[in-house]
Length: 155
Length: 310
Ligand SMILES: Nc1ncnc2c1ncn2[C@@H]1O[C@H](COP(=O)(O)OP(=O)(O)OP(=O)(O)O)[C@@H](O)[C@H]1O
Ligand SMILES: [Mg+2]
Ligand SMILES: [Zn+2]
Image (cartoon, rainbow over all chains, first blue to last red; front, side, top):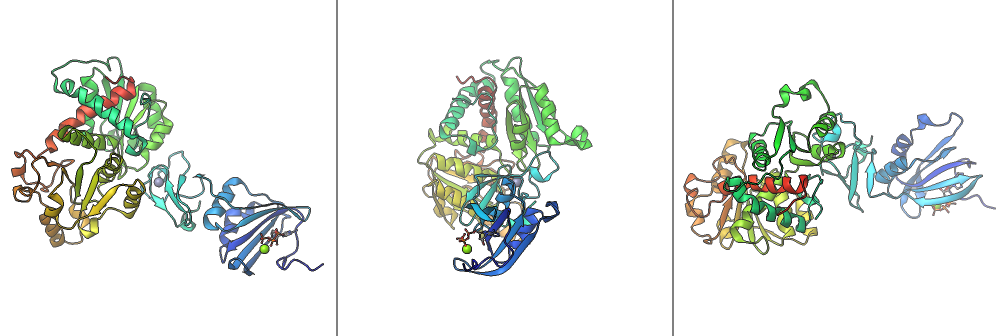
């Protein structure tokens, strides 16, 4: 049996594959995942600039022994809206879904408005609602400021 | 209608029906606000006025509104001499006040402060201005002024003039006018146009909005002229400011081409946008607008604190 074309890196037994990440965005995805917090025996592999039929070029991140929290999935959905997340168990894809942005995004990004009350040391998490999808624009629930440059504001 | 116990943070939180209800009650409050009728429906209540940014006008109008209805008020009028100056968070200030009072009125320098206060307080919070954010009682007052002058809010032609970019009052007013199906004409210098975000929002509401460069043309069939303050700080140089300020100055000459029933409004204080000669004309509605701030706040306090309308 021919090896799947994309499995350029060692297969993992259990873990998560984040595929179809926009070209060059995998390092941001790694930052969201928080590689430092992982189980010390886990392997993290990153494939940069991989040929893709659908999107020309893409990045892939594979992490052993980890499943993403909903909050991290939301953060990935913001900066890499084309990504798909596959859960691998016993070398097999058990679940695969596109990242999906919920109506409310809590604690993922800072409000770009420096004068917003959420940036003033109050005991409150940032919260946005989706003002527009494709391309995504978020609106701060508190000050109503809109934002579309999420990379600069991730927490 | 369930306004009792509600936070009043943004005009966008209110439906058309709710706005109409508030205006109806506000209208009935006029004789009480004038002192010709007594009504003590807020007797026994305490309203906290938390002005963590000074605003004497707005504070006094809320204070007057509560007292006209027999209510009492406790006040933070100067944040520099209160616990806030010691670095207390807004969240803590609000939780403390909501233990003392039956409702809170908040003025704060940061956008979104009132929304946060609403979450922290178990008593209703009324936003009296949060930074460059929302100021719903100003908008309600504007609507009450238009309604009183024209008997309706629907189908009117409203001109918004001046600083449409930074002037938060016009953004909220434009939303409310769109809710009532008014036709909105925008007149502003290119650098102070309505932000795209607001224009898009109005489009989504299906509002009829257009721009006009010539003020006299915009005024021809207008029912309302809403004048905003044009601040010097918004301009790079003095001459540019002087030019803009001069071309948008409202005087008898420019109003001579307008309809008899046109009203001129301004959130006050004015900085020379309207010539004093206009004050005596039947068009001048800005002093009435200032007065109506009291019955509007009375109506709102009555509905929010007691649920009582008529
Ligand atoms: N055992 C494994 N270890 C590491 N990666 C795996 C493993 N099994 C699958 N993958 C990767 O998980 C992702 C989803 O697997 P799948 O077999 O569904 O891929 P696909 O057929 O290329 O589908 P797609 O249309 O999502 O690209 C791919 O990126 C694949 O390379
Ligand atoms: Mg594939
Ligand atoms: Zn904000």
